[in-house]
Image (cartoon, rainbow, N blue to C red):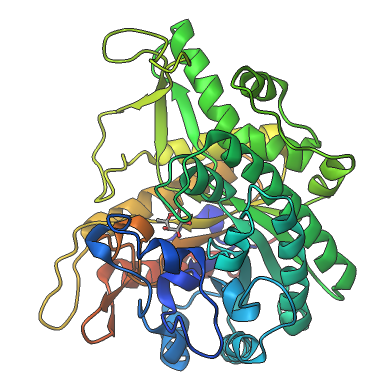
Length: 460
Ligand code: FCB
């Protein structure tokens, strides 16, 4: 199916991340990351699974790039494993680790596919966590050094650079509720992590800009949440304000406007937390971005009351929870709310005015594979139809949308959910490592082709 609003000047891609697909965790000098450690914590990951082998992508680059080329997309978004490039998170580059990404980039370029690099998709070198992790300011400087090494190695061929993937997850899931690596549970540490992630972004962006010659598209990817008040009550509107503040504005206001939102810092102060801002940090963080990456999966209705109608929790804090829309759900139990994506993009355009690209969107469903590996995943196709349609609607409404990347190219290691949740448009049989394009992948490839064709021959 064609999406005429996306026919011109629009990038189509598929996305993955290093720890979720590469495997080969102790080859060619790679050091341990916080995810290698976290996966060993009993109960941390469903089934006690880990990324030791994952999709074995490290050993299958030619085959995997063939699959990407076969889908007809123009761009492949992947992340570099920091502990392959700097095994302990500091010091010189590990040549063997760099060589892997060198080969990957060259293989992509040979096939006419544009590499889109994410520098940090959550695999912090364990040694840096041992030294304090993201709550410690020094990690931001270490990240900038790593970005420089990565850019020195690949910047002659790679135009598109994303500093961080979803700093909200790194900070909140990693340091506040401990669902993700490194599994700490300390709200104050999580807020310090927010600032140091943003500072790391700004320092890394400056290093890349200083060194880069030729065209460059530099950005950050956020999993901005779309929140609506469940009702018009004051408590629900307040819950929405708090949720939006901690999910969206605490990142976007410093990145775009060079300041933390006052209501959020006041809420934090009431909880005894101050952002560890030093002179000059906000100038570094707010250097202009070329593009904002958006990862979208679902939306949230915010309620400011608990099941009993109370507006304050046992901890003395205002109640903030999500209540259902009453929509069908994916296998992640996430509600399917495509129009939330149009509303989110419109709001981000109005408030922040940056060009945007969907760097992740997709869905896990309980796939049933046929003998030959094929998967008739009409549910995933329907999800993609509706969400790409939502991007088209935003573009028609005047939002500057530059592209769409499906999450994910492959079924892969879905973090704390292990291998049980399958997001791929290509199935991976983990026993044999056989890859099979699912029906949704065929639909995606056809739609990319038909959409491009719809743009050919039209003026403008
Ligand atoms: C995002 C992550 C990505 C994947 C999807 C389902 O939060 O960036 O790695 O796990 O969710």
